[in-house]
Length: 227
Image 1 (tube, rainbow, N blue to C red):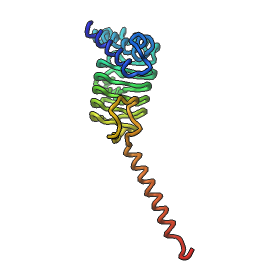
Image 2 (image 1 turned 90 degrees about the horizontal axis):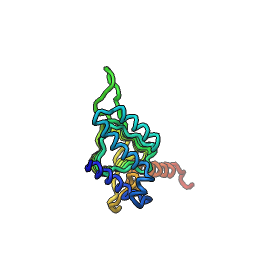
Image 3 (image 1 turned 120 degrees about the horizontal axis):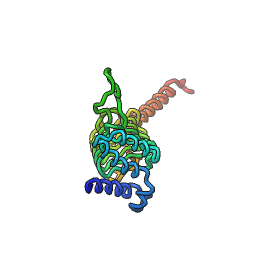
Image 4 (image 1 turned 90 degrees about the vertical axis):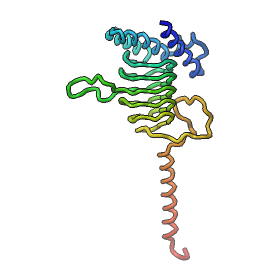
């Protein structure tokens, strides 16, 4: 019980540390739907582990209706977990989340291969997130993939493959971006910074420049002498 209380306390303090709009623990408890959903999940997960599965599922559905956050009771979540805004977050049954992880609204930690030839597949089918991961709004992380420690998932990214520790990924499908060395080491809301360079965007800009250059050469080459 004491350990559970410490875990919930770390969840409350995570809200204060990462949400500049929240000034106190009381405000966090009363006004953060994400925190309310997390605290409720601590209870439903305890029931789930004690095989009160139906009770846990029913309570989780009530919490989903009240907060807009859907967390399956079977999901395993570490301390210092923070869901900002909360609405539309979905966390599947076999999801595993490390410590000090941040999710924004609209994030899905979803499963794949839900059914096999002989019926339901009860094996691992949802992602595993390491410690200190930030997942931006609307991102989808699908399947039994691993997201390494200290990695960042950009808003609306669709992640279908493992993400190495310390990487930042964006896009559909998600791909690695080059992190700027000039920016300060601070908490990055939504997972990405304007200074980060998307290699695909850089390549498209390079191709556009080459096209413009070729157009100029072609135009100059077709001019008549003395024109």
